[in-house]
Structure formats: structure tokens, C-alpha cells
Image (tube, rainbow, N blue to C red):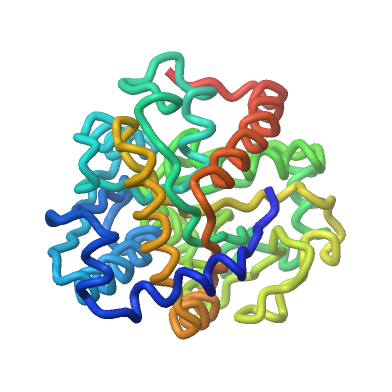
Length: 325
């Protein structure tokens, strides 16, 4: 998945939030709004959603609250939004790949994402890093691969639940190098990362904000980032190709907003414009320093990219044989 920054759109929409509250109120729904985050408090999408909510609330004069509904690989929170009214008072902030891949991973979901969710806008691109615990013997990518091949299923990899993007991503890495891991599910990314920091498990795949926090907390080894260029906030971490791995073996993902499927298209378009307008230059600089790449898109563009994701990851998931109950 390519992270695409739509500069022209962001420039066009940035003036909405900077404009008078009355102008914003005409574009934003007239009632208070909740943003459902299907992950625990303190997770990367939760932090982003809370900042967006604060800015929207200040600019619009409406209450914009964040409601955490974690569990079941984002299914619990997503179901809340899928079944909500379409009046613009409920939004979902979620890892976009979860919406794309959950129908491929689970035999039955409590909602139909194709009809009960509408793409609004992509908010932030997420580069993924592979890290190992402070005492793990391999401290670079090639040594990690060598060790893994010599010790199949002896490397414990922390995942934020079965089917999470870091589970699929590490399976893609394993397939690319002929490795086999032992996966340890945690109840979210925060405890998974704590497991690596404490040495309880050996490795994890995580986003930039968490990767930055890990390096500040303990001497973990960041082996590689899944991008074609290094991250400015972790400049010493090589790209996967620089590290000796294969291009595309570490995926990337996007934190995105969705509306209930019954929301009118015109309202979805207006909400996308306002949400894109939150990403002022100052906001983008702040989050890029934290490991997120601020994006911004139209509902139509987001839907098209999700189709591309579906084609790619359907093939990946079938090849890897990942299927959940």
C-alpha cells in the first residue's frame, strides 16, 4: 500500500477549521459527535482521534467525544458504528486494513462492511517497524533472519490479537525469508510492546509512534522500517531493503475515518472536508515528528484504495492460510 499525500486537497480544506466557527458549523453536523475507536486508550489511533476531536470541538462549538470500544480485532467498535444512525453523529477511527481484511479472516461478522460502512477520509499513514527486545541476541536484520531460520518457532512475536495488522505483517515477513514464528496474542498494542520491552517476548511489528516510544524507554533494536525511505524521527533505522530484506515484505497501513453506511453521501463529503481541514501545517508537523504521515483524501479516493488493498491482502491471506473463527 502506498502512502499518498494529497497536498492540494489539504490546502483547500485547511481554511475550514481556521474559519469562523459559524462557517464550520454549517459544514459539520448540528449535533454532538462521538468518534468510536475500537482500540484501548493510549493506542496510536486513540491519540490521533482525541487530538482531532479536541480541534473539531473547539472550532465547531459542538461536543466531540472519543469512545473506546476495544476487542475482537476492532470488530466490537466497528459494529457499533456500522449499526449507528446516519445523521453524522457517529464516526469510526480505525486501522483501515482491519476493515479490509476482517471479512477475509472471519467466517462471520456481525456487520457487512461493504454496505454498513462508508469511507470518509484517510487521516494518517503508518509506517511499520520490526523491533526486538533489549536482550535478544540478533541486533540487525540479517542476524535476525539467520537466527530465526536456525530456530524455527523459537522466536516469540507479540501481536495485538490474531488477525491484527502486525500479525499479518509478521507472517508476510516470515514468508519472504522462510522463517517460522510463535505468535503471542495480547489485548492491544500497548501490552504487546510492554512484553517486548520486558523481554517476555522477543519481537514485535509496530507503528512509528510506538517505535519511537520503545527506543526512548529501553535499548531495543529496531531492525527495519517498511518503507522506501528512512523515517526522519528514527533516522538510524534502515529501510527493509537497506537492511537486507525484500521490498514490500513489511506492509504499511492507514488510520482512517468511516461513517455508518446509511449516512447520506453529501454529508460524508462535507465531513471529509472538515476532517481534512484539521490537518493544518502545524498539526502535520507535530504528527510526522511522532511517526505518522498526515494524509487527507476524498471518500471516492479512499474507497478506490481500499479495493486495491482488498485485492492484495486477499491473495496474501489465502497464501498464508490465516483463517480465524
